[in-house]
Length: 299
Image (cartoon, rainbow, N blue to C red; front, side):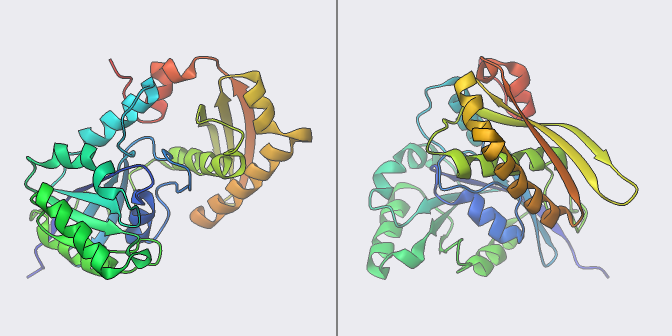
């Protein structure tokens, strides 16, 4: 008789830079969500898929939760909270190394008070003294009735196996939703665009605001197994386009090279990547742009 399987969704909520993308990539064992030292790199909900024994764990990496002001920010925060009703378990991920963690997380703990399926995950615990960790855990548990508390370091991999075992034990019995070897539901075209966006952030974060988007315009497969990908980097001003391109095309060339190398590693084949920069003044207010990012334009 075959072993009974279970399957379910875990939504990972947290402030910007709590380490949600790093945690999900570490649990999945591969990059499915972009990581940056800058806040707000995850814009739409990303699904990462992990097998733990007979359980298929579907992790939802959400945008960071904060007080939104602009249209794009509102769409991102809405997407994060919209993941809660779909989730069998909610992970509240907290940066334990932040001395103001309790105060900053009030935005989340206030909203989670009525939820009965929350697990507290304290991250970056390798940088915190144990008495401070215990105090933080106690204070947060007084605010929300968490099912359990875990202390992990997503970057170093500490505590992740215990977290996975607990996750598997909490999911409902049922068939798996995805094939065993699938690690994300994000289309490869979108993942490729996200990787280029990550490289842009890392290269230009001091000069360039967050008003940029990357779209994969064409994807051509060849008989030798290689692929040609054309992407457009969309900004709102000519001055931003000049920064993206760089002197003599230096910036866009460097970003393209770094993105291509990572795509080749992920896809395990030769990649030809062509990048172009384009100005669309009000792209951040366009419903079409939001659909391309997997978001809804706020009403």
